[in-house]
Amino acid sequence: MRTTPENAHQMPYSPEHLATSRSLDHSAEELYTLRAENSALREAQLASQVEQAALQEAVGRLEQENARLLDTNRQFADILEERWRAKLLRRGSQVSSMPDEILLHIFRSTQPRHHECDPSIVPGPRSRWLEGLRIRKALTLVCKGWTWPATELLYGDIVLRRMGQITALAHTLRLQGHRSPLSVLVKSLRMDCCVVFESCADAVRSDLEFLLRECTNLLSFSFHSHPLFPFSPVQVNGAPFQVNDAQHFDGFNPSWFLEPKPGDAGDLLAERLASRLSTLDLAVTLAKRHVFQVALMLVRATSLTSLSLGRVTSLLPGASHPAIYLPALTTLQVYLDHEPFAEYITTQWRMPRLTALTCLWSGAVPVSLLATHASKLTYLHFHDDPWAARLDESRMLGKKVVLDAPTLLSRLYELCPEIEHLVLPLEQSQLPKLSVVSPTLRYLDIAQGQYPNLQTYKTIALAPGADAPSLESVRFVHVLGSSPWLPTVCHPSLRLPADTGSHKGPLADLSHVPDSPHDDDGLTPHRAPECVDSGGIPHMFPKAFMRQQAWAVADEPVPELEDTSDDEYFPPGWEDHKDEHENEPQPWNGGWACRWAGIVSSASDDAFGFRGYERLVQRTQGWYLGGNITLGRGLLTLP
Image (tube, rainbow, N blue to C red; front, side):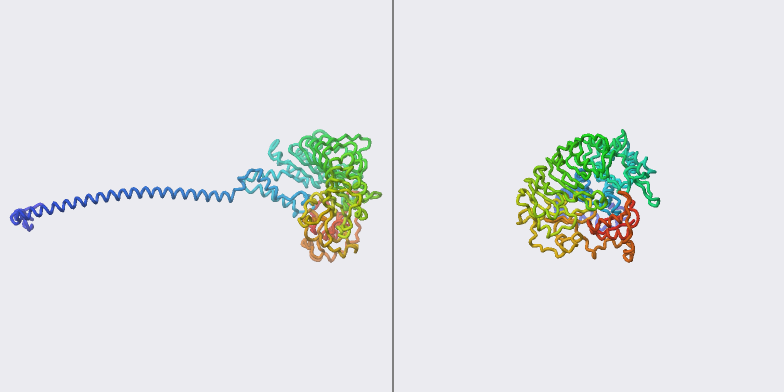
């Protein structure tokens, strides 16, 4: 502090005073102390600087460690987020990342098999086929990854049940342009009871021709006619199909696909037969020119592997039917009740690869046909539908209902040297002496028009002169409606371990099963043995629930008191009036116009025995024109 005159008197000591008051020794000692303190302060400062440098180095090291830990933490966070996203993706879109071929295989497993469902409108809106269709439509809406395989499944098998669906499908394909991606997906086209009305015939015909022209990858074509409508538009008002004024209608089953004119549906179908079509199913009664037209189409069927034809009532008089060569055909199903047609197949057809033959309504063994075409047969089935026989009793007059089985069984090796599976009806008197001669026969199915009988089965035995060393199974097969495919679906090789245990031989061991007390009470056609109601392998069919056992395949009956599956479709108290219509006549009108109730009444007693059919007979009146009516397992659906 600088000394001024004003503040000089305030300082206690002045330099002069200090100089005079302190001695030199004291000054030296104080100087020495101050120097020591200065040195100590410098050392302390140096130590502090060293410590500060160490701290700065530690801080730098810790900052680097912190940065490394932050980076590691960030990496872990990224990994966790990536794994979480991947987990979410696996949960949500793992299936969509699969190849389309695998997805398509999975999607197909969601659909019922063809023998399990009826695609016609008869079963109504709750049918298994419609359930499968709803699933196919829903699969296309799940996600983009599923769109193409689900669309391929949706368009792969198309069933046309109403004439409006033909126009709708054609309109959809036209929107896609020529050779649209959707048209190439169509592999199977089925027309089931698809009735066309005269007022819409031209438009529907044009659209059907468009479908046959565009669907170049078509592998299967099926046509099942409606039984109550004529097969040609010219017959709607013609003499063969007269109806009274109250019941007149102008619908018909289209026969356009049989017309051979260039550009018509028949010519386009023949083009498909000449290219890739491998399956042809025509479930319609054929007569005269229609038989000739079918023969002309089959001349070009070089790729056909499976053929099913409806009943042939007559051939075109004076016409020279062409010779037919089917090099790839392996499966054939035909009606043989018209002898000229059977002779035509025998003499004019060549089928070198035929392995499966189903003969419908064959009153006798077609020896000449078997001698010509059965050299490579492994499956032979003689099927006679008892329900259809009642619908057309005129064909049964003067004809044998049961085949001449002894002739076939004794000459089986001669006629069918490679046969493995034979299905045919036998009379009860023929069962104790089956003279089977075939070293290759493995399965013998005996068709029954009634419920299998345990006591009757126990009488089956091979004749002393029989020679069937490969025979593994002899069983009854309950003929159920139009079911020629029943023995192949319920194949005898599908046997449970209990059926193939210690017992050896073709006949099932039923020694432990007592005879039913009802075997001889006259109710055998309507009552199933107790052992049919449990065990075995169940099979679902459109009109029945079948149960396969080692000794029989039979319809599982629904107990009368337990079948309440159709009660919800009838108003309360309807059973009080069920006797009012029992004695009403059920008139017939030609071969096609009949009261549906009358058909079911005559057929259900012997062939089905369903309570639902009985209720249908009691409830349904008037003509059946294709409404939504469900038949089977006691169900009736009235829209």
